[in-house]
Structure formats: C-alpha cells, structure tokens
Image 1 (cartoon, one colour):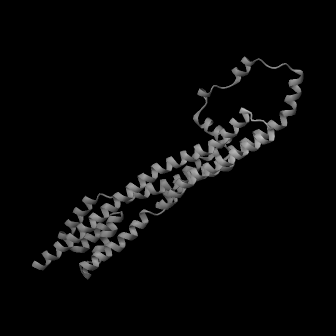
Image 2 (image 1 turned 60 degrees about the vertical axis):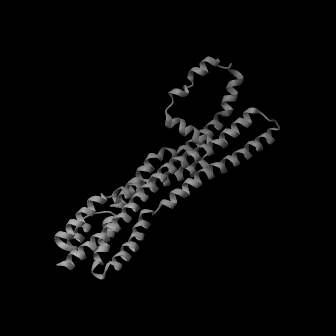
Length: 279
C-alpha cells in the first residue's frame, strides 16, 4: 500500500511539472524559427517603413495579464535549460520523496494514549495474548514495539527492554528513510544555481570581449540570465527546507511517543507480574 501511494505521489509530481519538460525544446524551436526569418525581416525592413511605436506597443500583452505559469516558463527559458533543468529535476525528486514521507509518517502516527489504555485493559482482561492481539490489529511503530515487547514477556523484563530498544532502532530507521536525499537536494539546488550564475557571468564577459564594448544591453542580459539560475535554485531550496523541517518534527514526535510508550509497557508488565504473583 505504501509503495502504491509513493508511485501515485511521484506520478502526480511528474504530471504537475510536465509542462516544464518541453520548455527548453520550445525555446530552441523558437530560436530556430527566429534565425530562419531574420533574412526575410531584414529585407522587409529595407523596403517597408518602420511601424509606429504605438501599434507595436498595442500588440504586446501587458505583464499583468499574463498567467503566472507563463511567466515562470519564460523565465525558465531565459535562464537556460542546462542548469535550470537540473534544478527542476531536484525539485521534482525532492517533492516526490517529501510526499512519500509525509504519507508514511501520517500512517505511522497513532493515538499512543488510547493504545496504552487498550493494551492495559487487554492485559488485565485476557493476559499477554489479548494484549498482543490488540497490537496486531493496530498499525504504526508504537504498536509494533509493543508487540515485540509482549512477545518476549515470558523471557523476563530484561529481555523485554532489550527487544523494545533494538526494535525501536529499526523503526526509527524506517521513519528516517529517504530524509537524507531531501537534505541533499536542499544543498544541491542552490549550488547548481550558483554554478549557473558563475558560468553566465563568464559568458557575459566573453560577449563584452567579443564586442569590444561595454554595452549596458550586453551586460544586463548576461547578468539577468546568470542570476535567474540562482533565484530558481534558492526557491527550490526554500520549498524543500520547509517540508524537511516538517518531516523532522514529525519524526521527533513519533520517536518521543515510542520512548514514552516503551516505558509505559515495561510498567504495565511489572504491574501485571506483581498481580499474578499475588494470585
């Protein structure tokens, strides 16, 4: 079930960001079409008077009327597909892991107080086997730890504590699975953005050297393209960082419940053995 939910989450993220996968190709096609029509436009300009500035401004679409997705696509094309595409892949993979972890952690969250009460009542009503049945019918790492501890109850409290501690480490590893990849994408996205910025600045200086003129248009265009990669990299890092902190806090909460429940389980078994000894 968890694997199916993970696949659904990944498929949803791919569908969400699918339009960006063809942006670079569209940009290259537009450049090719512009190059093919440059000669024709030059010939027309020699024989045809320039159009009025007012008519040209009327044809342009105001920036406020453009959709947000269209603006993002335009900026993505301006930033260049080389590094912008890699940053986008970091965002898609990071969000896919985030969705999978959020689903898993929400499924692993249980009402610990209610479970402790039910296990306590089951021990006093039907013994250890009844309590094991309650844990077997309850999902989550806390119930799994309870079941492992109860399963070793006939070997003594020391074995119960060792079983709870060892199996608790296994459950903690399951909770933290994949989180390191999110932190990797958080660090990688801005680094790729900065690398794109440095390469863009190098290209801008190359353009200045080729033109042998420090033109504001040449410098501004090169710097704009260079900084776009940094902006997108920082945006990706910020988005993933927010989800990363949420996941870490969720894991800490579940681990705290596991530790508290383990102590309560040992106390319940001690009380149960004391009552059985009196009988």
